[in-house]
Length: 530
Image (tube, rainbow, N blue to C red; front, side, top):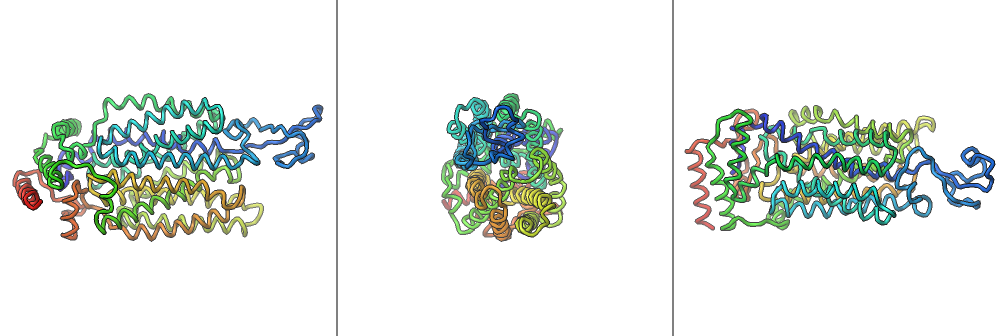
């Protein structure tokens, strides 16, 4: 049993959703700036060792006397960095014997995201999407402020882990929070909103303008503060309120949606039926755990494949994003190009999913990403020396675009595999898998040393191929209604299909009392059986 019909009756994507969905989506602007901060803070600008000769310009003579970025220089080696940018590397001299710290900070940050995702999965289903979402925003705001005042790289690392927890809370919650307010055909559109590339673009502007990692942290915190004020206007998830039996609050949200969308107030009898159906699962509204994702062979398969998809996407995506500092050319230009190339994803994904469905719409970009990763690896050896940097940059930017495209489609595909009562748990498990992938991404970059990209991108290409296979293993969900309870899922599995009508796959959920009475009889029978 599900709420699709009721949501369509009050406007599947009316004015209310057009205000609410972008409001929630804009949180990713803050997330991406926080998560990808190390793409800037980990940059190693030009540096050289000081010389005893104070009459000559050290910059002009460093290439001649061998002190330019030479860790073994036998002169007086007090390192001086170019003032083109101030990063964590320049702040704490993270070069030579300390060069491992930057990638280690990335891995620690991703470990924090893993912890945040696990916490979010449990708390969002027990305490609500809203509390976890805004809790993550608050943690992110505080963490960015504290980061700017770090007094050592060790303190900075701990704060990055704290920021990772905040981002994990947000990422594991925001998409499901959004789709639980919209109709069936709008879920893929919500996933394809260009909020992530917009956040990257703003990060590149801040980096180019401020040139200082501390000021960028403070700027991101400043952007977060007014966003926290939306707490007073954004409601709790309609679906979560219903399955938790908080029907008066759910009806209040429905009435507000109907008013904004200029629709008549609908019959809300189905809310009681869904609440009863959930009670029939355990005599009282129960708290689910991650073990419920493995309850049946079918759920285990969905959980394994969806988690592997997110793991693969994260390794490839963050491997490219954090490896940006190793690409040739201007750092700011490369970051801007990577952001701009992701902006056209929305129309591309709508087109692909409309014609080919979720599964093919995700698998095709993953396959292209694999080909581009292999192409980049080959370019490092076979491309002409004078053009090699351009080939590598082009392949990296295109690979990031394709893996992002596939990840956005798979977000919808994976989320639609699970019912509401465990959907946030499944999302958190997927997000946790992605954070493990992020931890690995920081280390994959080290496979070829500091400059060689061949081995890392061969590994990324192989992983992208495996992600294609996992995507094909999931069920196609285009046009299917979101189930809300485990009983509904079991019925759908026994029936082998989800009944829909029309070309758009509109679910046959009527708001008429006759339909509700039929469903109530089904629930009563299930209660007796239990």
